Length: 325
Image (cartoon, rainbow, N blue to C red; front, top):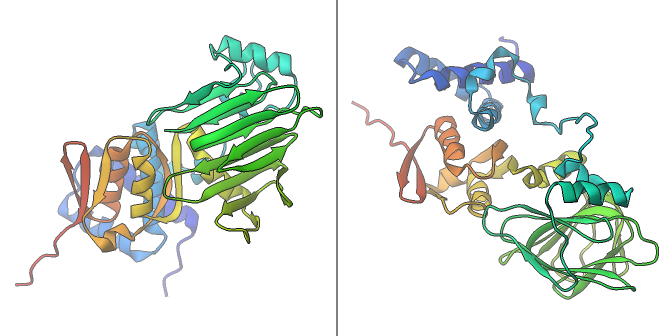
């Protein structure tokens, strides 16, 4: 009986196939070997998607080779730098003067009280606040900021925002969404309000209070009805949920249809899926949010689908099975 391949072996093979596919069309013999590998282990498709996702983002699959390591998908450890990066500004919790100076150096202005700040499709915008907190707005999002001596109030009007709250014991930080108020003194959390979905709250660090509910780090709350309760979520799942802060989309078993809907938030290019079975296929990988075409090419290769571009639409369909003779 053949020994079961390890995940490392499958990842190595996925990187080698990705590099080979990047060089040009496969020969009939190579294609037969590729299809046999792809169908031989249920982990192969996910490994290939991860490898192709990385190649899309690096724009060169040849850079993968046999040294490809899935740990490249993990949050990188950044060395200390003299100038604050956008990511550091998001996770900062102290030293107001240093943060404000860095944001000014980045050319980011602060909104006046009562101002409405918005983003267009595909745009991500960092908004520094006067207390040293920051709001990162995702695509097609809008907030209103109102600060006074008694409270720091930000209303999420639509879309998705990540709040990194600086401590101020005198004034609570309040996020208002759909008439409900989230309170915190210091936390990092995401609030999402999309037209078709209930409000979704994800706490990465600190504590956020909603009425009598306390949401601690690595918890999620969906505001469906009065019986909702916070649910624990793994740190890895939190990282995937917040990948948009780096301009990426992370999938771990979502259907192709769900992935296509996620890409539609960031681009006018729509991914249309012409086969219900294909739409239900699971997707795994980390992809650039602004590259639906590159994502679709990876999907077409992994699931042996046909890709056709029609104006702003990318259409994915199953290849017709050959007729028996």
